[in-house]
Amino acid sequence: MADHRLASSSVAQRHQPLAGVLWPSQTGDFSSVLRAVILIVAGTALLALSAKVMVPLPYVPMTMQTLVVLLIGAAYGWRLGTATVLAYLAEGALGLPVFAGPVGGLAYMAGPTGGYLVGFVVGAWMNGWLCERGGDASVARLFAVMIAGHIVMIAFGFAWLAFGVKLGVEKAWLVGVVPFIAGSIVKSALGAVLLPATRRLADRSRA
Figure 1 (cartoon, rainbow, N blue to C red):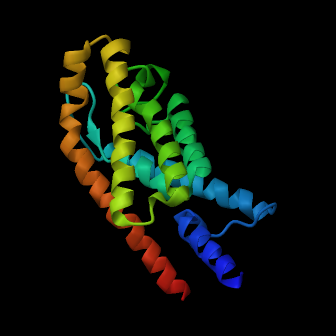
Figure 2 (figure 1 turned 135 degrees about the vertical axis):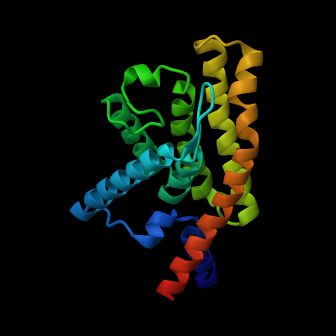
């Protein structure tokens, strides 16, 4: 019975979001609220910075944001990860220059990148949910989760370009999907290596 409890505890620890390992939350304490605020602010700042690391393309620039979105979901868990991406979008909606373009605002969000921005929310939620259930238990599994997250975000972007911006399916595929395939694979591999490596370092520091 004791061995069963120990095994269950080990599984729970392994599936705890990385942020919970590095900075455990105290339930019902003011410090837990402060912790969430700090993590959300840090996450939105990282998203804004990653938006500026970009390769300009005709309709949608290629940035590091998709990697950061999925890492935030995986590291924060689905609740805090989703809240962080929503807070980031709220900053952009208020006009703060947090997107790839020089300005924010609702007009920018309704432009060609709008579908990808919605996909960020779904991608962060999905990655966090899957990782809390063992999706980060191995590099191979996390790579599959990261690939799935990229597919979701690109699918939202493609649908918006094709039907919202009215580029049509063929052109939306050529400008909104094809240019991002190779980068998504590379970023997924990078994320699948970075997160477990950080967790191992955290485990060693606590040992």
